[in-house]
Image (cartoon, rainbow, N blue to C red; front, side, top):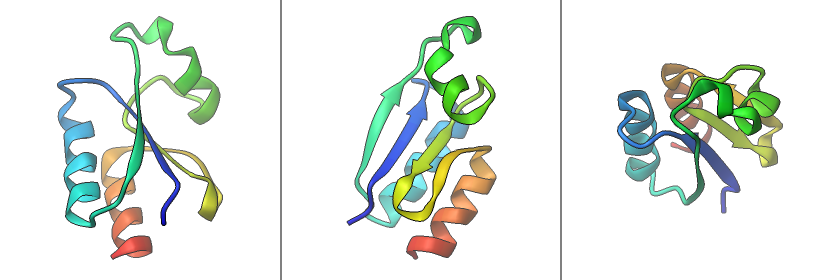
Length: 81
């Protein structure tokens, strides 16, 4: 069972792309909604070094904070498909 966490923002098309892939692969994940304001995204910044979303955390595979939706989708396909 995957131990995935996703930092996301409601209405974010890049986040939706990652969620779609998570759903396609039938992967459970813990969702963390971030504030709209980048200046208030201190939690996601401390994890990934930036304030953009989505950000994936997969501690079982040493992923501490992967940004960029295309990279996340590729990672999920390579790791869990």
